[in-house]
Image (cartoon, rainbow, N blue to C red; front, side, top):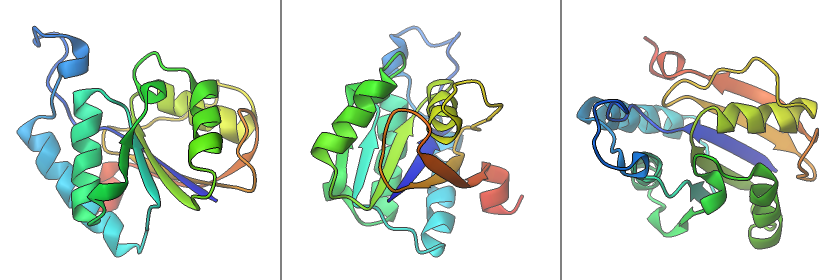
Length: 165
């Protein structure tokens, strides 16, 4: 099974946004850059059985761009376990119970949650020095998904690498 983990694109500045953090949208630059990233990722012949996103607006918008560019809007779902402060153990339980027949899953969320999840799945510990840039993505592979060391890190790319900048 493959698990792709994508950090949301560039969002409105937290300090100057006067609404709840969960409502911060992508910036115009963030949306445009994410669309370019999605087009480049599509060239890699990546496919998803399910796209599972945080319900926070910036992640939903990022996931929506991916679903649109990959022509798979019908597989876009949302999980409260991917939001800021979500429970990664519950996320793994949700994936194993609701999406166990999926061979390729895209998760869209936030930092530092995502790097901690990657670290836990690859090493069994949360403290690997992993940096997920906004719009960055990684690929993990595994036989059986558990909350602990179960996966191999196949690759991790920053937007600059994806876009050849």
